Image (tube, rainbow, N blue to C red; front, side, top):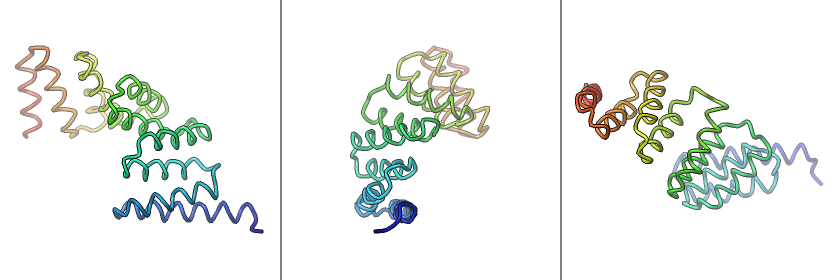
Length: 175
C-alpha cells in the first residue's frame, strides 16, 4: 500500500495536470483529473478549488459550489473561494448570496479590485447607485486604468441624472 504522503503528492501532481488541461481548454479531461485528484487527497483546499474551476468550465455550477464549500471547510481564509462563489452566484442570479460572498473575500484581501468591482456591479443592479460609485472608485484607486470600473461609475452617474459626471467618466474610458 502506498504511504499517505506519497498519495497526497500524487494528488497534487494530478491536480496540477488538471489545471493545465483546463488552461488549454480541455475541460472534460480536466474535470475527470480534478475529480481523481480530490479522491486521492480530499484534505487539500487547492484541489477542491481546481475541481470547482473545472466544474465551472463545464457549467456544473451547483457542483462547483459544493466543491468550494468543501474548500472553505478546510481553509476559510482562502479569499479565492469566496470570489469564485460570488461569480457563480452572479451567473445564477443569486445577487444577495453573491454580495455576501464578495464581502467575505474582500475582508480577507481588501485590495482585490476585481471583487470590489463586482460588488459595485451588484449595487448597480440593486439600484444603489451611490454605493456602486463608492465601490467603483475604490477599485479605480487600486487600479488606475481599470476602464470597466470607470465606465460603470459613469453608468451609475447616468442613473442618478448626473449627466456631466457620466459624460466625464465615459470620456475617460474612451481616452
